[in-house]
Image 1 (cartoon, rainbow, N blue to C red):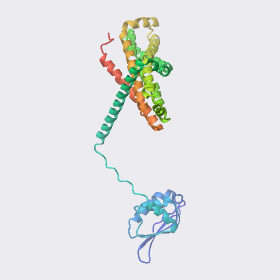
Image 2 (image 1 turned 180 degrees about the vertical axis):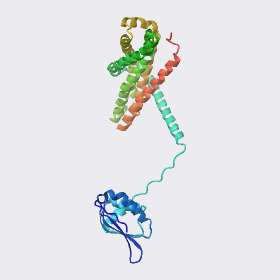
Image 3 (image 1 turned 90 degrees about the vertical axis):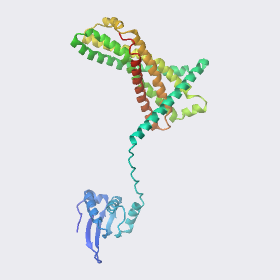
Length: 378
């Protein structure tokens, strides 16, 4: 006659033999979560063993209180169905009626063996969708530019000026700080290696080529993509959420002419200036570290720099700035216009915009490195 009884549980299981000779399991006490307490798992195992006998008669009339937890405990022991022989109180009947009406869980979906191909295919189609969207937006901007050349009075000077200030002037602080620190780190690490070979003078070559040709443009583009690109996407996304874009459409004002084109033009103008500023500050940081670590004077550094770094590297860096700036603005606006009217889409679109912009910046830098591999190298 198994029993489960303790200080924290008043439920008792008592197996007896009925007048007809059939086995009967009588439950008395309270079958609630508070009463069961730490005896929940042992009692569950004991109920499973008792439920294995299909001829067992269950008598729950002695249970004074029962809650959902107790009913579910019994229901699972019975295999999610009532036993053939069951007696219980009328007030407890509704608990099991509700459990009977719970729909069965859906059948597990069989694992698709071709899911890698499916995922890859969806990614390819999504990439193609973004590429076609960017091409369409670029074509529309080209048509808008032709229209503005024929109607100069309609050029949105205020929007261009405002975006030029936000993406250019307000980005000078962070780009200067990061550029200065990068210059110091690069100069310090390079000087350590050059001192081992007595080639201290070549620190100017390393800093000049690496900063003016590569680090300056790429660093500025990444910072602008994370700062200004995300701002552009968020601005257009908020306009979508607040239905301002729909209002512009109703008034017949094209999005590309008033919103996208000023951003692309402003960032195309601001980026080479930001690149020039970042490269100059990074060179100053490298010059300071070189003077401290190697004892190279500032005047010698500045006089030697034009001799070892061809002017073509500077033009190459500025060209990267123009291309990267327009690409960042175009991608940011593309994702901004695709945002739906909910906050979740706003956050997802901004994240995708920044990640895509940084990826495209690195791809553009790689293309420039391959195409102009023989330019500016002595």
